[in-house]
Length: 351
Ligand SMILES: C[S@@+](CC[C@H](N)C(=O)[O-])C[C@H]1O[C@@H](n2cnc3c(N)ncnc32)[C@H](O)[C@@H]1O
Image 1 (cartoon, rainbow, N blue to C red):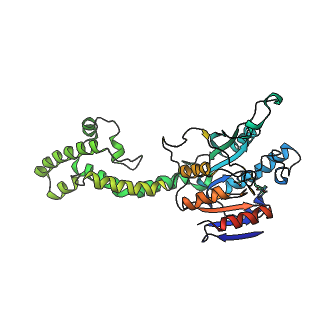
Image 2 (image 1 turned 60 degrees about the horizontal axis):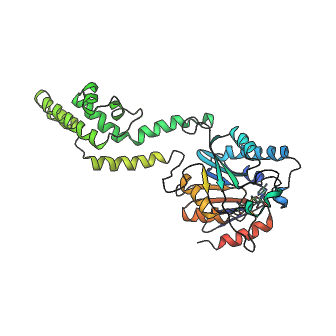
Image 3 (image 1 turned 30 degrees about the vertical axis):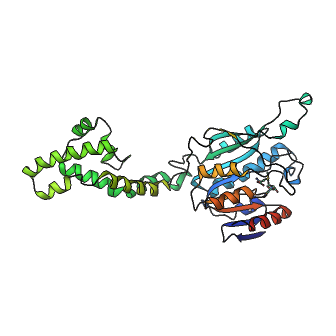
């Protein structure tokens, strides 16, 4: 086995069989798996013809999936490419270990279907590749059974937001404003969310303004009945801009616990994606993935600093570029020594 660290340690490149290498990785050490395994007898290359039957191929893939399950963090994401032909079986296999979120259809406008002689077809021409997107079962709660992730999440949420929760709950307690009155004034039945750790959230700007004047009126009442100290603590004295700035900072800390995912209306946000495939050039890996597609995956499902794993690296060109641009670490595994050599040469030039 060869293991190289290049690009100031950002890329760990491994020349080995992926199963052997995966077994050496620590559990829960990877944030995102983006990978493109052999398709089974789609390409003429030796790596796509290592198994004598489809059943053998799927059994092998299941072993790989077991290792993915082990190394992927509870908040991690898996994107696995597969051919349209085996997509259904692959999805079922993945579903036995992971919670499948999407079966993404990658439509290639410039695909090989254009070159088929249509009259000779015995089935409809494939114009797509599929990408199965999955997370751990219970990713927002009890992922990986005994890890107590839900508990940790709840505790962390309470402790991260503790200063803000206390600010609100202290004020309410000191002012003694009844919940019923708060609900009536703010027009919601959910005001308890602002004063207790369970499902805590920040009121809106409008709701906060109502709370401030409500608590202020109560403070005037308190002033007559209680001490100055009680009055001070009962006032919601912070302005909303400061409050929401604190909230945003704390929320960011909390968000780092969850599976990253963000899209906008300006990117492919449905499960049908249109990206052109990489056109032939001298020395191209037969399955090189387009950079815009890989970058789309990583923009949606990564954050700076995360560890990305591809155990079927091939050329590694797109995933490595995306990792540099989005400031992630890459572990890439490629079994074929010749492909590996070319990949290392190419990726050494990445800045
Ligand atoms: C479908 S290609 C991936 C191409 C890649 N997405 C790219 O953009 O270039 C699969 C790659 O996995 C490699 N491979 C096949 N079996 C492997 C194994 N057991 N361990 C590691 N790599 C393997 C093959 O040599 C091949 O380069």
